[in-house]
Length: 441
Image (cartoon, rainbow, N blue to C red):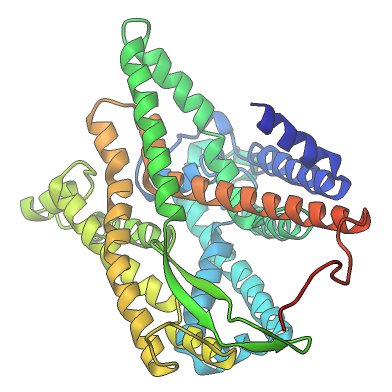
């Protein structure tokens, strides 16, 4: 406890770090405030919050802004869609891949393309959002018609652009990834209400069961942290190098290959596709018993057919996203260029093949862990836990929260270490030249 208090004291004693943290709280407060500002002409009392499906998932990510028909109703999601699309293009299109390698100028061009694509995607999604989520009775008569549609599209597009700007400013003026932090705060905003609702449903008679649920949630979170942090360390050796006219022995290091290199993306992609069977059945207008049975089966997150297909899709997307996010050939080329090698493995192509073998072996266990986390909310719901509280037992929500919090804490720790080192240099505890040191001749 004393160490925790000391850490907080160190964080707020550094003016720059304190300012960055306050900037984060300011931007997040503006984001949460915007989620309650309803679109002009909408009667929020006549809106219904989605409880399941893709709309329920989006509402969770946006902290209720989607169901509130707010100016941040689409939030940062169109920007994420545009970013994923541009990222896939960098793998498929050689011209864009070359642009990415141009350094800062290339990244600026890609960022500009992502922003323009975000505006186009938001404008298109705004039309669908207005048509599917805002009923006619929720629109005031004096605002109905083209005036409402045009103004709403403009407000939603401006809201997404503003969220995108806030995310970039959090990254620049704060600590951590601003886009991920906006999603995380939307998810966390639901947690107090979910836990109060669950406690109210259990009552005094179910206090022991509620306590057991909290214990299970703790272990699930710890397991998710272990999955996020787990790495396979590949030993690395650098050849001898002459430093300041002295021969220094080669330094022993490691290549950290993460057990879950793909992060939360496989679950997001798989969950998006899991809505297609029911949507296709409904869109086709087929009222046969077989079509209705298929639609009902793949709309039920508790059915074994749903979870089996969900697991297969997660495995496929885990391998796919790991393949495009971890470039073993580039790692091998960088090692060869810097006189580094893996003991017992030839530099170059042999190193790339060796890394591919290791990645293939650790990707399957990582995918199985992702499957376990992904189906935990369904299992929790089947066990009698309310849907709002069950979503924190796993799935995309938990992975995003754990990943963003760990990344932010690591950056804060690095910042503290850097400031501590700078402070020791200023106080004279380190000097530029070694003193009273004997070197063997």
